[in-house]
Length: 112
Image (cartoon, rainbow, N blue to C red; front, side):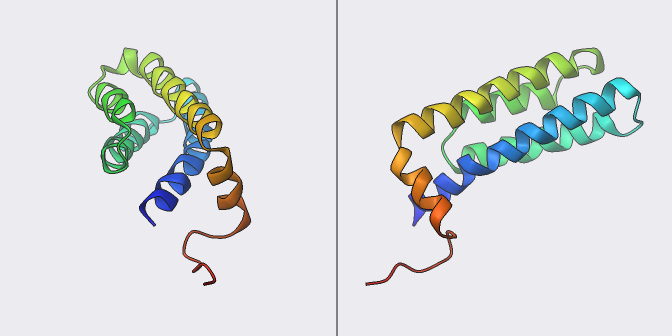
């Protein structure tokens, strides 16, 4: 069950990448709360990365969360790169797990 949750977590990183792209656009458009949302995303990934054993996510998220405003976007792009590498690495190392997680929800019990 733990590995299934980890697989689902890796799959969820794709939506985090989409969020990063959206926040980058909002930040450059001058959205008043974009910087807060960037830090909130970093905080969430910091905790979840540690929970699932992805220390690179934890480290990159901590750096982003503490970044100065003029360094937010570069640090966010570094976090995005870490997420992309983890997705790619996990998909290569465990393609059957990714395929199986696409077939059924994680909460669905396996038939005996």
